[in-house]
Image 1 (cartoon, rainbow, N blue to C red):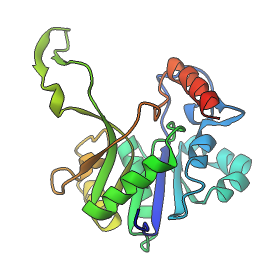
Image 2 (image 1 turned 90 degrees about the horizontal axis):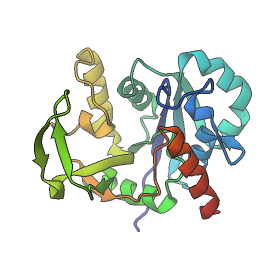
Image 3 (image 1 turned 60 degrees about the horizontal axis):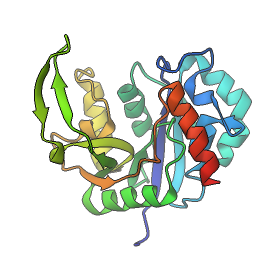
Image 4 (image 1 turned 30 degrees about the vertical axis):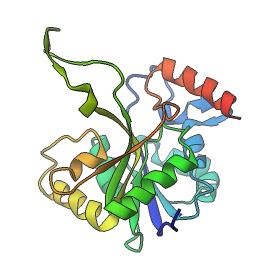
Length: 234
């Protein structure tokens, strides 16, 4: 694989964790003796092309995170810890614009995906460097129905055209930074649920096949599964 250019990593970890009940925010739940956020950052530790990490946390957590984990975060290349925005997309946009202008690529990764592999990160970064923008994704393997709010099936979607987005999502910085700036300046009128949506209308974005192991922890069941997968992978 060709060498990858200097890159930045943005980790949005500012969500309310509403689907994972409990007093502790999702990013700080335990996974094999360390917070989920730290385990996620560790997945990028051996990747030399990642030169910096911009971390966005809930505004109420900012001082506590700096006080409690500043040393370990610094060792994991976290160069900037910022308060997150009003939504995930807002946090990502703020994080992208805080990355170094010398970075050629920006990768965005969910704080709650600790099991991504180095090979997956390199693959999506290489595709983005070659083509401009790429995301990890999985093809939909089950039939997908479009359903009304009252539960009635409206139609069946063509499964062969459907993919389930994962992260990292990787972009040339000179593509994603202007898109984020424009979205903020226009008042955040759209509500993108992933980062590629900020570019899709104006730039081609490609998929790189991910894996089922790169799960996102959202529910208590996901956390239990992540703990099992973590133990199996060690």
